[in-house]
Length: 111
Image 1 (cartoon, rainbow, N blue to C red):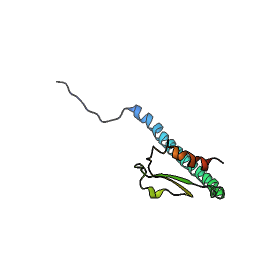
Image 2: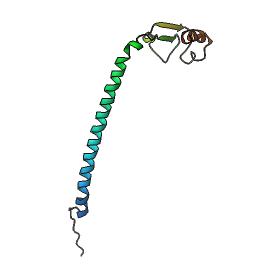
Image 3: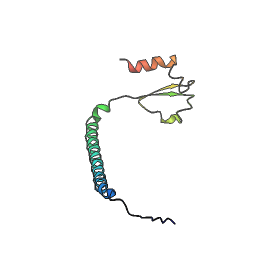
Image 4: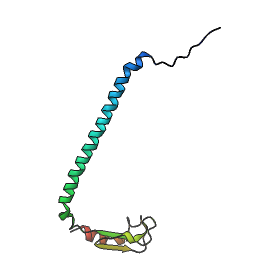
């Protein structure tokens, strides 16, 4: 008869690796903290730059091009801006190649 024993003890090598795992987890948590702090600082700097340029951006004009048969961008009531170009018989992709839009777009883009 053969007897088997089932031992639930860990080998001694496990305890040699355990401090490294704990140190690595501490390293990852510190690295994550550093990344979060850097992202916050960069965001603060960028928000300051955006706030400083608000006066320049307020003079920018917007033009909305609205297609009457557009089934992709719905509802069309969200089209807003200083200038509105309405093309009644075009769809969403039809606006891209429509000669009816070349002149209105060129008039607004070119000086």
